Image (cartoon, rainbow, N blue to C red):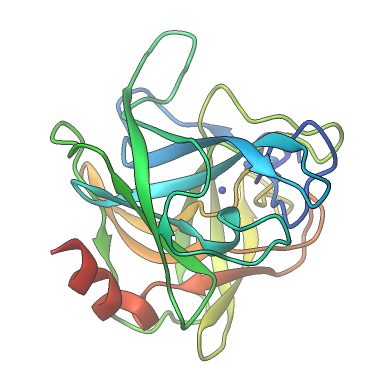
Length: 250
């Protein structure tokens, strides 16, 4: 969830006003080839409340981890005062999977009906109204990430941090694990550039080890500096919440 820069700067958030807690798309990244990473979700939200009673629209990125469940960052779902919420979906949310190019593909669209917030880190699970059976879900890594480990980042975030907008073509990039903390992992851009990084609307984007048509989810995009950048990006470790994910998605 930054790719064209992680694409010019590579699902954080598109809004009609300045977005809070948004993370960029993959900036300084590259296009995802057709047929790959269909488990990466573009999450579109409308009627998000503000304290003054007005609303706005935004985007995040996520990943399918079970036929009826998508994982993303927790702060994408909140009340008017930016407090994370659990339970019934707080505003209309559409999840689209199974495509890399919106200009030529329609993908598989579902409505999210429920959100569950993890206690250990800034991660949420979204329940879909009907299962997705045509897209292989990701596996959830249960091993502590290692410094130096190479991961793929894929997302629908903005290509630049300037006047950000969600990408219409999924972006990807390669990062290395730079630091490991109790619930988070810091990653740094490696390819196509050292400035490959997540960008606005990449919040919730998966960092993973590709495996055939699927992948092993290692961490989830949280928040970070403007994109693109060559610094360390904070991500939420998946192994810390693997049991929580398994319990709710079984």
